[in-house]
Figure 1 (tube, rainbow, N blue to C red):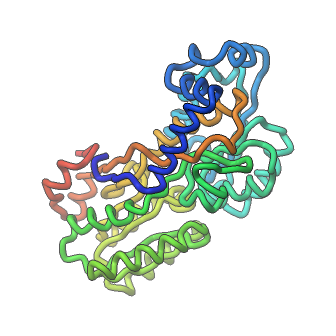
Figure 2 (spheres, rainbow, N blue to C red; figure 1 turned 90 degrees about the horizontal axis):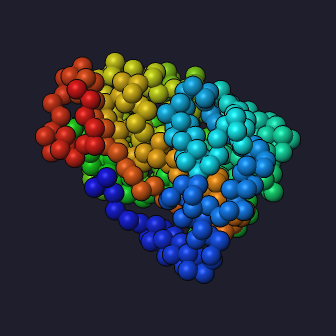
Amino acid sequence: MRLATPSPLKKKMEANTLLSRHTNRRAFLSLLGSLCGTAAFPLSARARQQNRTYRIGVLEQTSQAAQNANFDAFREGLRELGYVEGHNLVIEYRSADERQERYPALAAELVRLNVDVILTRGTPAVLAVRNATGTIPVVMAAIGDPLAAVTGAAQPRGNVTGLTVFSSELESKRVELIRQVVPRLRGVGVVYNMGNPTFAFRWKEIEKLAQSVGIEAHLLDVRKPEDVEQAFERSGEGRLDALIVAADGVLQANRGRIAELANARRLPAIYAAREFIDAGGLMSYGPSYRDLYRRSATFVAKILNGAKPADLPVEEPTRFELVVNLKAAKSLGLDMPDKLLALADEVIE
């Protein structure tokens, strides 16, 4: 997406990744396999795939049906790399059913199953899995702040690696975009789950950002499904002209209700994930989660091929999407700026 700019964290990780390609032949072969499919895997790796069945544990906030698009991308990525369900792969999917307090027990269950690797997403889930095991490799499909789970992005150490959605530019881009829709923006409601440790830092940052452009930010804290209604009741107490909604697991699990309430209160909203637009939201800007899940399959395949998580640098998103829903705009009585529509990756008529 043309709005995204490289961060120092991304440059540092790219430098480390380039160095590892020149110094580690095994990592190079694994990378080649991710680009060219199973034909690029070493013969010994293909032999292992044929001779045994691997078991992947998955810990998610929501049901598999609710994660269908992302999880299909993960499966496709694995299939391209030679790992196919029913052939040499079993996937053990566990859903917290939108209840973060269930993560520790579900993580312990996956550990008892002695899976080969665990895929998970979001800070609370990642921390629950990391606390449950220090030996089973863990791949993060997405996490807000990777330093909440690893000691360093370039050298994760430990048993956790994967992908982050962290980018200091994202919130500023969302503020910039929503201001194009609401030029006289004075107050913005920020829908965060403050029970997720990654949002404490982000809230301070967006407060500073809002002040710098003359906007007053109001926190709408949603930690569980029951908080959604209360948060929107509080939104009526402040002078809110628009909303910025994060992509936390709890928020995504309740995306339909959040979009419905935002539209009902005639509050233009920009969301952090495409899934909110599918639920009727106005527009979204953020990383492509489908792309992140597809890339996470490469991490899993490398680990099943013998790589250690500690040797696989955490990677940033490379694909960003701006999606605009003109149906929602019409219901809100908004004329979306031509400049914004020209930037969009997808416009829903």
